[in-house]
Amino acid sequence: MELGMIGLGRMGSNMTLRLLRGGHEVVVYDPIEESVKYLAKEGASGAGSVAELVGKLSAPRVVWVMVPAGEAAENAINTLAAELTAGDTIIDGGNSNYKDSMRRGTAVAERGIHFLDVGTSGGIWGLEGGYCLMVGGDSGVYQRLEPIFQTLAPSPQDGYGHVGPSGAGHFVKMVHNGVEYALMEAYAEGLELMRAKQDFSLNLAQISQIWRYGSVVRSWLLDLTSAILQEDPDLHNIQAYVEDTGEGRWTVEEAVNLGVPIPAIIDSVQVRFRSRQESPFSGRLMAAMRKEFGGHAVRTGEG
Image (cartoon, rainbow, N blue to C red; front, side, top):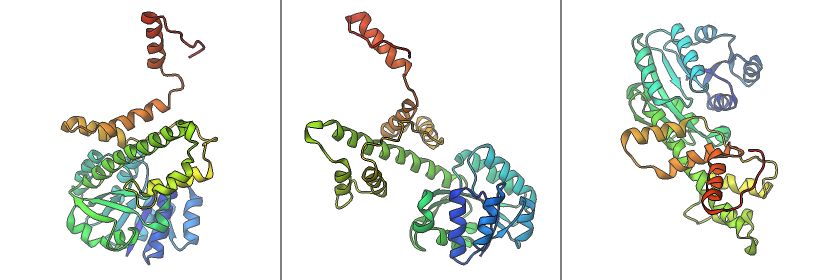
């Protein structure tokens, strides 16, 4: 099957390579020319613009957009939609907000263009292991393009599926990332607790390795955690600053709107915010209050 790929960051490039290995013909475009040239050497057809990419594809065209959520995705999809014609399909495989995907799907449908939102998980490991794909949009379009998803998935039978109408794919991926936040936080807290029990001299790398087999908490995330601790048990070169790309916040907002309690996910998002504060004001204020009502000592210094 022939398709275009816009957005050749590491994940987009790896997805293109997997598609090429699966026998698909791929036309690629990215503002960074080096990325296009690299994939052209691997068998893709390079394009110097969105218009050129569209011109190289046969109708009905299929173009996968793999760019960051927000303005970048909005601009890419609008530019692409202006070049496509009725019967063509846009696939957004980034982490767009599901409400944006619903709006975009409606907008391009007015021009006869199909739209699928595909929540994509697998990160930098997807080239070899495959990607988990959560697809939203018209079921008929999904079925027609299923060979693409089968190639990108871990196997032709597993790790992908049509989950609902337009927006559903990115909604499911949003919740997926909220769960991911909570799992990461649980592992980190448990390992930190064991590290604090100094009289046992626990070997966290060994313990995480033990947990990988037979334990109810085994997971791919634990596999990665174990590898990290094997390489650098004390994480000397890592700062305790944890960024987020928005999906956790969107999950919390959705839970509030629906009245659904998700305390573990909410707490994990809050911990990420706290990780970015070197000397949080609330902590300093609590220390000052203890001194005021109880005469407790405080540690002074510039905040």
